[in-house]
Image (cartoon, rainbow, N blue to C red; front, side):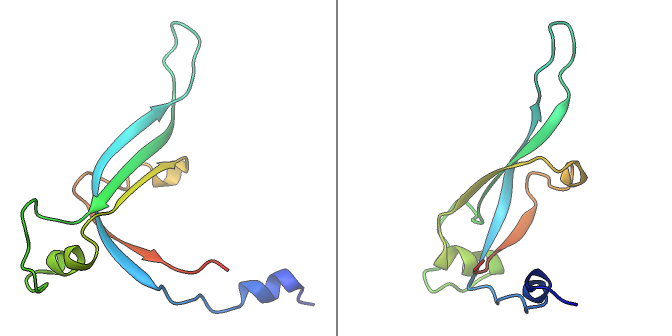
Length: 106
């Protein structure tokens, strides 16, 4: 028999209301604490992303490459997150371009 939790999981995923295109600016390894004389082990990666852009003005009308289109409508954005899932470590490198979708969670 299905319970309320199962039914919620079966609902279709809402459509994203916005998509941003971002570039990985940096990936920094996070270390845990260790006693003196011992090497601390890796516990996370910090990802810092910025909106795509080419460092100089794009065409005002939004024409050009895809980055120009995204930069025209979202010229400034940043995202800073700490990832503690070891399965994701090493998956992102500076310079990687990613789409970030904003989907209602309720």
